[in-house]
Length: 266
Image 1 (tube, rainbow, N blue to C red):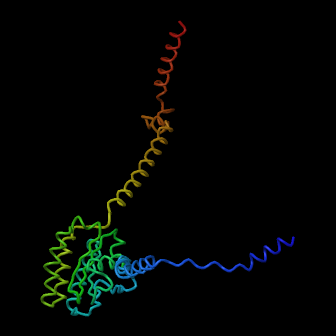
Image 2: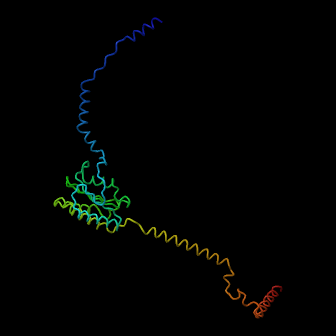
Image 3: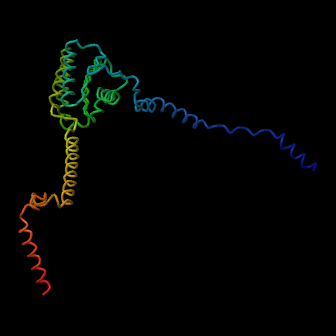
């Protein structure tokens, strides 16, 4: 017992082992990797993150002039085109002006974010159009809903952007440029109809035809179940000939019946 206690005491009083020193090359490699990540990897990883949608402006109707560059008369004209387009075709079109692209890289990215955030064309099954002007970067973009790409292909969008919107930056007449772009897009989409009125009408007609067919079938079944109503001699059915002095007809008929029965007995 004494030996065990002495051994434990000696083990408990043993000096701690010294820490193993880290090689210099390991510390240099760790510091170099951290510096490389901060200078090169970090900024690119931050760019890959989606921008905050809270920085996007709120919609102000058919024309959202957040940059404050549109005259009242041009704004009214653009609004009128958008209203007429939606009333006739169901296509929702909005025009937007902003001061800067921040935090987006291009006008196309900004327009796509606005289109999704505002839900343009959602109620009309992706039949929406957004026209965007960015003043500081002097960029413009047009975003078209998926169901409108067939009638407004990218070639038409690029033509409208390069002619109507690019000229607005050159001349400084932003309202006129937006109006020309809105008119061109509305003309391209004028044959679109977002509603499908034929299906409800066909369905209602089918219900009417079904009910009419059932009514006629019931009337026919009731008619064939009443042979008295189908008697070809209406006056006889009403008894107008019986007891009217023409009993000879009945007697002859009875005699014929008797002869027939006699032949049967043979």
